[in-house]
Image (cartoon, rainbow, N blue to C red; front, side, top):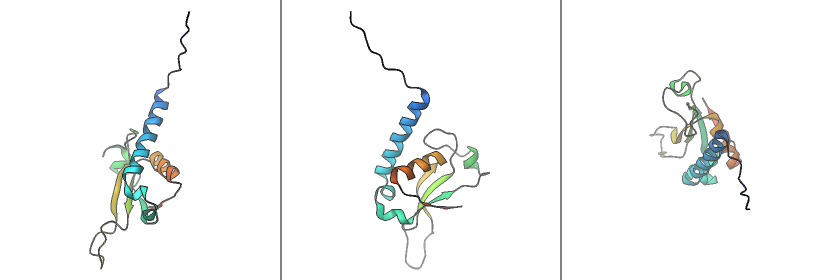
Length: 116
């Protein structure tokens, strides 16, 4: 008789972590401000206050499904104009939790500045 070898089932937490890793990889490849190293020196994380609606989960959620977000990626070179006629901070990617921010920085092996 043949014996079937069954693989152990992955837990919900393992599936969630694998999905999140794949989501962050796709984000890095699709966003030029994360993909191209020449933009890395101008990137910074705009952080929400701990008592804001975003950090409390009332304004949406991060893509990983944690229920809140408190970071947005900004770039100072995006849509700048001579003489400072445009806004200083331009969001290039929004709605990230702290775990996703750490995952992106770990994947890129670069730490971006943080502004409050």
